[in-house]
Length: 304
Image 1 (cartoon, rainbow, N blue to C red):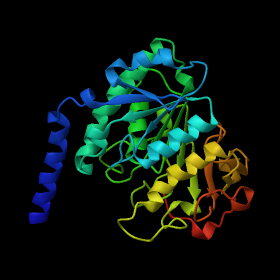
Image 2: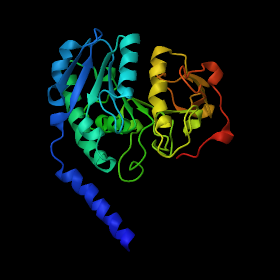
Image 3: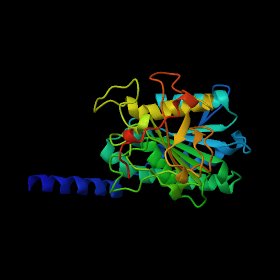
Image 4: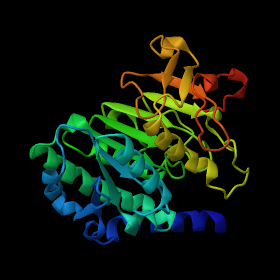
């Protein structure tokens, strides 16, 4: 009885927070990185001001950090530096530290408010000259779920969303998770399924490095260790630098359009479908190229 009352209390607290939380957009910013080492921050309400500083002919990549991370965290630095040093793409990051660093139970409902405000900002940018198909949102952990919220609340469908080990807790029943309807192409990289990452196949194509679960090579098997969860963004950043670092093998060819091998990450074909597997090294450089394109059905972790 006491346990049931506690669960009811937590549920009431959770849903009341979604109603009474203050306006969060005052402290949400988009940061555009320049190749001279500088950057420009604009409040999400004024995101249009960034357009004049972009090359509208190139991709517009927006990175969303994970839970308990913020604009200067390792995930943001690795991804943005990889793009700045190896591509001509416009690279931005969302500064939503007022939500991403909250207690997780509060961060999840607040994410909807942030997502809707970013969706409105991107719609406005599209109406002022940005091509929606050039927009690629990359999200790690809670940021991957935020990417889905943004995509499904926009008036225009964006080109691509990449989910880097999308957050699992509270995303099985209570909340809508990232899905293939949120962008023209959704690719997902699983590295900590069933613990911090979601144990669902949710993309057009899902990648399972080292079979997608902990411990990833070089990481500890510990309930409070984020190493495996963080491997997803480290793998992706490396793929921007080396397009052939991670070659993945399909498990069932009839679900992969008959394509047995594809690269994971930056150059993943946007018509890819199915489930792909590969192995990595235990430390950087993690990629093993075609040598890592292995698949053993006996090692698959059950997912829905």
